Length: 361
Image (cartoon, rainbow, N blue to C red; front, side, top):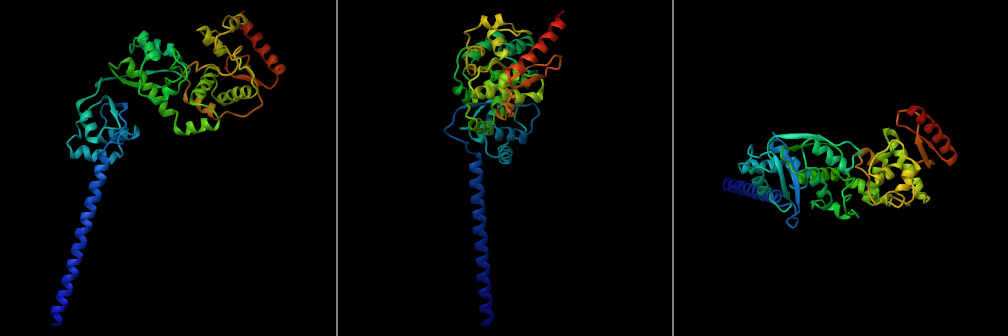
């Protein structure tokens, strides 16, 4: 009788363990299935706004998954790769430019990427230097065979692009996107349209102007547009990298005491051309122009060129000083002499103009 009791007890223990294992396995399966379904579902079913992405030639499924994660179009890169393998898409995803939304599921995205996007195939590269204006950008891209400049500039003024920050730009007209076509080196597919290229540059701007930058702008009491407007002034006024935060500081110092900015770069923008030497009659020729900071107080209505990452950073983190003036040094270095008083500034200005006259004689 004792042996039977022991066997019965052992059987109950075994059965309990078996039931526990089944429960655990079922729980694990349920948890995995829930995680898989969540990972495969749309990031935001209500957000149908299209985001333009570029899948480069030769990109692996894993790399494509990371691109989608970076754009907040899928939740998890490893799960994207797993689903692609499970559904038979691994190795079938094609290079190209695609318009994807957060309302698409992973399988829907995989189906789109397997068909092939616009302009799939060979790529070309172009570089836009810091400080270029939209007209310079359009002309360079036309000269290199990427765009029709007239069409490019028309879209700058009238184009509809899926970038939310555009709604916060307070100006319209030909200067609407001035400052927001981020200067960088780009690789685009052969056949990319003017719309594709503009959107690509706007996307790069969004990547550079991070949430941290937005928070910093708020700390300074500035809008994004004001930051980019100042950064464009810094870009246009400096040729020496280490001076950018100092020049930004001078601009802030003048703004703090309601002193006119009196920046030559804004007058040149109003004139529509860059001049090595700006004369008094040039300033008077555009006296009432909204970008003439000699006569119009405060910031100009918008950026005068496309600032690079360094100029934007310098604007958000300016160097504190008591300087209110700067003028080029009497040499070809592009560096400036900074001063606190008008008397100091005038002395430095005489040095520079005397040197400049000597160079021209």
